[in-house]
Image (cartoon, rainbow, N blue to C red; front, side, top):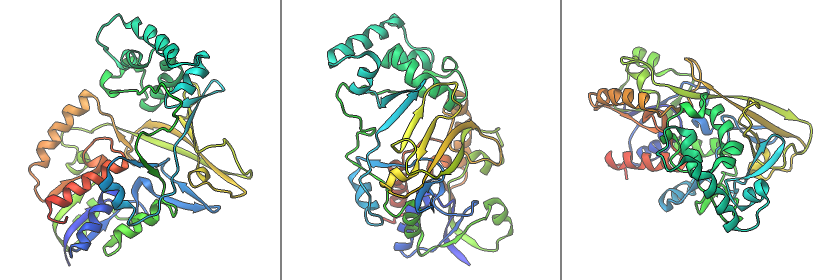
Amino acid sequence: MHYDYLLVGAGLYNAVFCEHAVRAGKSCLVVERRDHIAGNIYTEKREGIDVHVYGAHIFHTSDEEVWEYVNKFAKFNGFVNRVRANYKGKLYSMPFNMYTFEQLWGVKTAEEAKAIIDGQRASLGGKTPQNLEEQAIGLVGTDVYKTLVKGYTEKQWGRPCKELPAFIIRRLPLRFTYDDNYFNDPHQGIPEEGYTALAEKLFAGAKVLTNTDYFDFIKQTGDTFGKTVFTGMPDEFFGYRFGRLEYRTVRFETEVLDIPDYQGGAVVNYTEYEVPYTRIIEHKHFNFGKQPKTIISREYPAEYAEGMEAYYPVNDEKNGALMQKYEALKAERPDVVFGGRLGEYKYYDMDKVIASAFELCKKEGLR
């Protein structure tokens, strides 16, 4: 068989590209290492609840073109993400807003909150931040940093904030209103039928092989392909020629509880370092569930090792320099496009993944 495209990985990036290619009359073969499609946005039904198997995925966007596109394939439920943070048993509102400042200091006005934060920022003495801790204090002050940023960030990255580069945190928005919607985007929600159903519609018309490792497959197949779209790790693709890029992964502990509700909301962050997990998600709340049982997942960040799922890149200077070497190798393979969060070695929100796939579709003459 000859296929116009070999799509490596059945996540969102390739799903969007596949839908465009098939609609344009192109043939696609999809190979996926895991036993399911949809990548990290994969959802499955348990106890009548859509479980976000690889962590919470809440779709949000300001891109009208992206929003119009996804609504062709799924009905979104209007879920609004209102996160709570648990620090030493006390709950705080996230992102940082007037509820948060009232909980921290008992203030009632924006002017009072700004005065406290500005005073704490001054502790840096005007110097340029040299690490993530100094960067965060310069953005939000010491109290917000120590209570809601420090422990969570150190668990997430597996390193003290003083050892992390300042550029990891570009901004930490402060809202001097009582707006506790986690995202600023006008469009937000979760597919009522789950993300897997969305992925199934996007991959319709293509041949999909799950439980299939690309590197084994390409050695054994007699099929030919016009172009490959690779959404895996670029260092693995090139046989780790220059060494391994670093990634972080997440381990989940998921349990079914014989109670109707556990924490009263979808997401609670645990910002105290001594608590080993970063957050607990309660899946039924993503779709306003009324089931008699509930399902929760505790998320434990960890260093990536071979055989694990790579979740997000470690975008520090060392890995950035290493990635530049792999970028040079990519240029030598015009028959391969590297896309998505892993393929491009950058963190993407879902709408940005779709927008990036749109760009590839345009280059390939598919839209």
